Image (cartoon, rainbow, N blue to C red; front, side, top):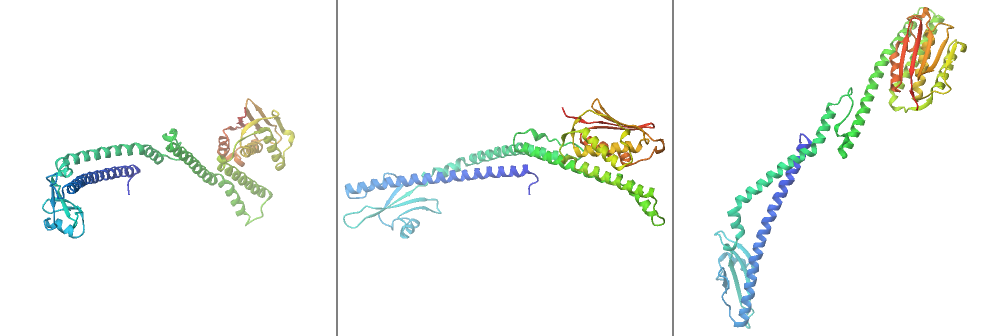
Length: 407
């Protein structure tokens, strides 16, 4: 098992280089020896043709034209190792001996008028074997040249493997060093090849994964923090119910705690799905009026206390569901903190929605709804790239919302 892809690629290139070198070296040796044997066989064939022509003209066997070729008229005159080949039925053969001779044998039937006459051409080709002598004389130089070429090929394979794998190694190091807190930006994203495509997709996948992990962490933290207060209130009230009958005020407080938990869960789930909800352009005034109608249905407020200074349309960009939750809770908090019967002003000017209500001195310090979880409202605004400011002063309660306007 290789430690990295670079080592594996280098081993593959080096092995392929050595294999090619060995293969072509062996092929060159085979071609050299085959060419040498074919040349000798061709010389014997020409000698046999000349001897047959001489026999047809003169009726006898003439002397060979080369001193390294011998003519044997009978099998008995052949050397023992060659005689065995002829007796075993080999009219043509290449014979190696332990004493250093290298014979080529060819049987020749001259076809006399009487009985056929067999002649054996025996060539001791030892002096003609130039390939073996060449390798003995310059074999060291050839081996040195071959080793040098192999070493050069290995160096090139190492540099090539390093150059090819370097972008992948850099990408692997960047992935290893990435963290959920930091932004994902790989240097190979600008490459026009497959590595650039891989880096782009990997960066998008890691960014989505880190975002999901952050939302999961925030959801777990917010559930533990935001639901603790209403659960404590409900637990205390239910604990008292075992010893006495709950008063109407206690039941109202239980209902308020349930509403608080329901609203908190709505916001938490909306934030957890925030990156999966597409934004759109919608009329913010319609959302404000819808929230006011819902608040009027669930509370004892008169519509005459609301002073609206809004244009006919307020086209904004955001998520309609998140915007509705944000408006509902901001308006609900403002109504809860407000003094009964005091004017409730809602205006839109200079790109900002302003909600103002006079604070009831008797309810100073009392919390309800998201007044103890304004960070959730701020996260809703941030998810839509809106701006939110909440001022809970001594005399008034103000909320400023700057939505993302549609141009």
